[in-house]
Image (spheres, rainbow, N blue to C red):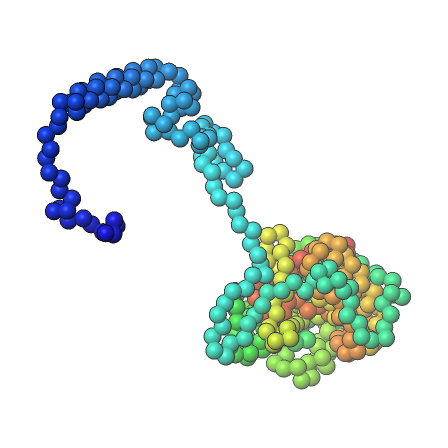
Length: 347
């Protein structure tokens, strides 16, 4: 018979059996023993009731519903992860800003957070050219006595950023000519505002380019006009936005944290054409200071034979702030950090 199955009333019924005399005596003795035990327990309970609380809790806790194995905290004492009312809160979780979890829709391309800083990669500069940067002495211009010291331009005004918190995209068209508030011009304006906030006069000249065709020639003309208007300016900054992908074609979103804020990583571009030594000296001074101030903000300095915007009478600093995978808020946070260091070097 399976003991786990319910037993029928008929099979479990036991017939009444009249006890013998010996069994009656044994039952009487058991009754008196049981009564004695009950009296002893009552005495223990009554005695324990008048004992001090610490003895009661530790010795007789099981009788009063307590658990002597638990250590309780009274009053206002708090633990390392306690709230202000004395109750213990769970430890705070450390945010992993590079964690990416998403099921990609059909035809979508991932936007992957990544750390591309020079310190993490162990690469100071990506330099496939013959330029020898070690022979150039870093130096940064100082602000003049005039009102404006820095002119900021966008050679590629059409460059745009991804939506906030985007994990993927389905149409690459978002990266060009997006809404005004997600274009690289919004980041340039943020850098300009922060410079002025830190005592450096700066103006922003929007090149309003719709494509890369003729963009550098247009930016060159506008920068020269601005220098004519502000002859006291000592630096031109050209703000770009990168496009970075991995080997599988996913769009990369280079980020770090500065003052608990997720921030796009940036890099300096340097061309080997005209004014190489003057522009490289400025770039190296800025780069070295940034790496000392923010260990993971800057990606490796990138040297190429591209002309860039550098045929001007003053040093030109070409910056890529974030990638197309970054949000504009992350890029603006980077621009603020860059502007603070730039202002200190100019003063």
